[in-house]
Amino acid sequence: MAVMSGMSGNEMFCLHLKGMSPGELIIGNSVYSMGVLGNLASGVQNLCGGEVTQLTQLIHDGREQSYQRLLEEAKRHGGVGVTSVTSELRHFHGNTEFISVASCVHREQPGTEALQFTTSSDGQELYCQLDAGYVPKSFVFGNIAYSIGVGGGILGGLKSMGRGEIKEFSDTFNRTRHTALTRLTRQARAVGANAVVGVQTVLMPFGGAHEMIMMGTASHNPALPPECTENPTSSDLTCEEMWNVARMGYMPLKLVMGTAVYSLGVVGNITSALKALARGEISELTSLVYDAREHAIDLIRREAEAIGADDVLGIKVHIHEIGNLLEFMAIGTAVKKHEGVTTQHEQLPPQAIIRDKDTWISGAFGAAEG
Image: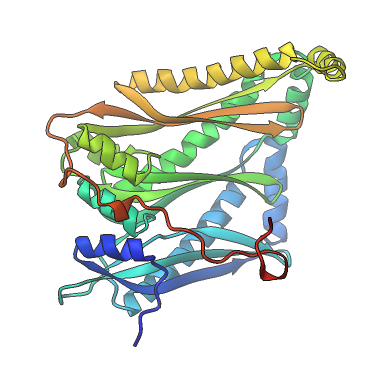
């Protein structure tokens, strides 16, 4: 039978270079209801703020069940591996569907087709990962559902009358984000990995709270220090970036994060509102945004220095509005140079870095909107 695969031509080419061929598109899903008791429990926890454990567990169970059903389908197809694993959720009719989608891969040379690995990487990223010395073991994720809470809202509301950081909010957000990362690396350690690569972070509202999920590929690299077996490294560099830094002799140490929540304050809000009526710079907003961004970056600088990193790469600062507050989140990968670290090849093939173009364009009457 013809293989029904979700892989592109570039992915097929890259897999061929590593002795693999594309397999079938596979799907696993599970539809959940929160239930009356779950809603009551999460509502009570929302009063206090922090993690909403009922929601965390429900979302984790739904994601895990859809993933396990994906694996069952992969085994039925005789896949040796699974690439491009996703973990998404969709709301409809008061229920939530958890869905995982991926593609099987097979060995080109005949042999025992037992499932050996799953990865969030696509075929191109998998090539980069393997060539940089990272052998994939399993798709892993860490999640947390959290809320500021009514108490935090009242306290924050009072403190937001003044200008500057609201440390109670900053501490809550820093704690929840690092908890998701800890759970991610814990899953990696459980499958015998010493690194989690290609980490993606997603924030979304869920059930009156918010969920943060980190997804990546638990991998093993023999060049990493022995202590990484107990404390796996983590990185949100793309696999292409990871190949480049490996070629230069660097390896990731840890995905580092820092969050600062700031308020402009009542006086600042009034002043900036009045100034907004006229054309020109609103200096109160300019200075607050600058200070908050620098504070968030300083948090990851201190975390990187504490673990002995040489540099922090790929730093991005995300800004989220929370009512009249602003959250500044800095995230990047701390790296360190190691002797003997390199890649299998001197160059990546063009097919490993060419981004696929969309060939389905949806617009009015089937035409692209201009």
